Image (cartoon, rainbow, N blue to C red; front, side, top):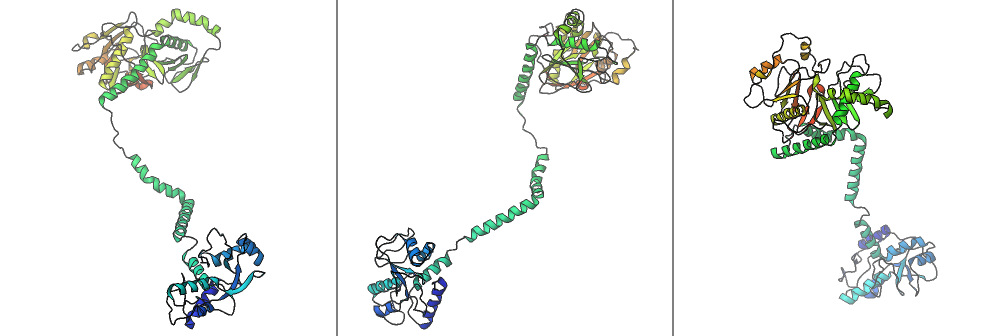
Length: 492
């Protein structure tokens, strides 16, 4: 019969009831509880157990377990019965499980074989002798002999105490694991509403119109100037863009179509050319494709040979007239923007940020002045607009279309136009005078006007919104050496 922890505890309880002196779980007490006993009487009270004396050269607990218990895996039982208990030489069996020759080990009750004997509990004997040597009073065993052999009561009590006090798992770890499992289960079942609820306050915060930090005026002006300088450099680097735009406009205007296109503006990015046309125009048979209702892209020619003769003819006859009213304003998405002012059927007003609007008027005036034979007048401070406007007939066919369609313009480009640039807001009388602006005169003013055919706006960053044309243009810089008395020619 194997001796377990529960059996040893029952034996200790029987001894306590019988009034026998008890040994402490950690060792034998130095004083007798009831009466003084001799060493022999104390040893006689120690239980009888199976004992094995370690031989010289023993290989360890596995060999002992295999030899005397028939199973090497039961070495753990031997270890639990003997660990940490003092031997006669003062040493004890530790976690390294190293044995010394002459040690007496307690074996389970079913151990048998040569070398296994029944004797008094060796650890009880050692404690009794130590107690007698230290204090004189004779110690007694922690357990009394029983009818069935059992291991040492002290060993059993110590083992029971160790196992009872040290749980194999920390309750706090068990609680944390259970809580994590509950949280994961909840997330797996209701993760969508949970995350929606968590996201809701952040969504509300994002919807608030927080005041954005504003750069100093100097920094904003410097950034805008740098962007516009880059646009200016792009236009200066490609001097043939205006010529290609004129060729494309003539080619599109002369192409057979049900409703001939009247291009209002051209965007040139290398050989890629797009034009802005009125919404009622119909696409030609070839060479063009529609990207949007009012944006057409030129399809490259299949062969250079087929386009050589038409190009030579147009370059001599048509390109110059087509370029006559093309004004390069700046860039849009990297492409140069040229607006055909021959399609303008009334004044042009540029509102928005006043300093940049004045520069936009200067850019347009410089572009027209760069064209040979063009009369350009820049209104000086204190000079009135009314005397500069020629007389206009009271009724003229086609003028009523201006108020209904801002993309409408003359059916044919008007040559020989006079340009009047007003780099300031108009007075009330000058505003009224714009209503009588005759054809052949282009008036570009700063501000808003109810008589303007095109109403543009420019931002502090130099972005020009061309209104009905649908383009946002990064305005180029005016020529610095232009003093409204003549200046450098616009890149061709």
